[in-house]
Image (cartoon, rainbow, N blue to C red; front, side, top):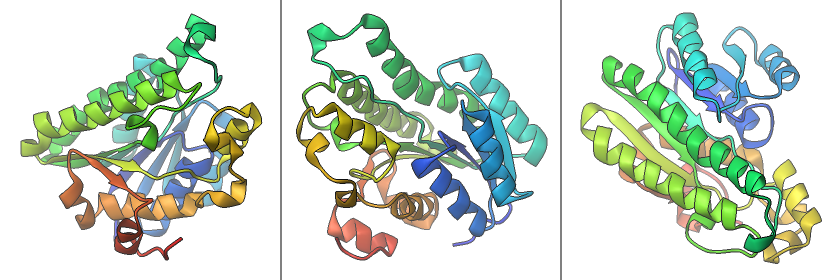
Length: 251
């Protein structure tokens, strides 16, 4: 695949899936915009990637910051072709009655409002260009319930509906909106989940999870021609047939 001349904005790009996706897109010729709250980590990654990268510190739960990041992207590169809504959070883990309301709210602010804010800011640019791709990182949590994860499961179910809404409202304007449910990935989030000791996911070892580089490869595949068949829905990377489509070996 060749993404030369295309600009890709990735949220949560300072580590894990976001960082792996940024590096992968850069190798495929794209200009990459890295956003996250951790400015120092973003700067290191941008330096590693080189002149094709732009780092923007941004809290996606704040619409003004999201809009500013999109404006900076267009000012620097002249266009915005792909948005990867990857940023998300899960901790703390509690049963519903034991949550502090502010903790539950913060996960919704980041995982749901952050995705909506980025879509809201990017869609006018993409429609004016005549097309674009918005890929939202989904989860099996959008489809099932796990103890202690009411906030995360609710947020990912909401993201799935944002994906469907984006496709229904803008698909006929050249906007491809789709999701990627990667399964469990060997990132810092899984280390934190394991430390909670709550529900079966915490019992998995880091070696049980797939590599972030696998997800990065799937993201690029879906943002290319291969993603056309999944507009408005989630692509499930855990399925053997899906891994084969992306070019990954079976697990």
